[in-house]
Image (cartoon, rainbow, N blue to C red; front, top):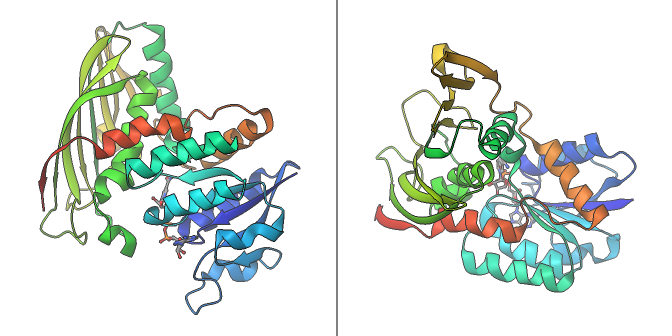
Length: 327
Ligand SMILES: NC(=O)c1ccc[n+]([C@@H]2O[C@H](COP(=O)([O-])OP(=O)(O)OC[C@H]3O[C@@H](n4cnc5c(N)ncnc54)[C@H](O)[C@@H]3O)[C@@H](O)[C@H]2O)c1
């Protein structure tokens, strides 16, 4: 039986506690929660019902709890220190996206996990959505020829949390990181160059970086193609679903995740017309599958599909290509 702790008892901590409870089939159980707000008058309300859990304010204090793995669901700027301490304590780690807020931290955590021989996985839960899995299958089969161009779009008037208001690059690290990771996953591709223009819309509650426009050149087994992306957390337009709007141009067909006739779904357009393939996103957001994958990787000692090491190139897309920042 794997004993799990959750570090970060905010909205995602609560959500992960439900995920662990739903998926604890004799292999894992939630034992402890860590949050600096525990014991203060800001202690998250949902913890009041969790009477069987140990509650501590730092990961160091988990030492006496016989913990095997930690789900790091703290606010993003706290991820690096939390993952570092969890690995030092000898725990396997599943950390929420974004892995860290800078590459140096991410690289040293990947090395530490290797040294400690622990599983380090980043929760890129969109990889478990049905649409991306279908795109990956079609791209791998070559049924419609090669990929020639990809476009992604996301915008939503997201009020943001205090830590997000203060972050560098909130659109890139909090949201685009999901979509950048998806492109790598779906098309087996890596960015070889890129140009990201980051800006902050006038109504923005963020100190900087509430929106961006990007152009990457991706390489998939020697085939190069452009990926254009628009993202904004500040808009007066109707919101796009979390999974994003997409257009994939293959030689012989186009795949769309779009809202034609207000029916957001996954479509195939070819010389024979347009057909709906199915859903692109997942209303349950893929958390259960992500947790299951984490447990399997621990139990079988295998590398997660979104390991810390794999995630470095996602983080590079989110952090390394700023050529223009308009604050
Ligand atoms: N995968 C997804 O689809 C998805 C969706 C939303 C949010 N997230 C990610 O989940 C994380 C948490 O988001 P949230 O909405 O729950 O934020 P939140 O602000 O609601 O909660 C964050 C919690 O972390 C706690 N915290 C801060 N430092 C800590 C530390 N060192 N150790 C333990 N706890 C600490 C805070 O006190 C707070 O209770 C973020 O990284 C966010 O990007 C992922």
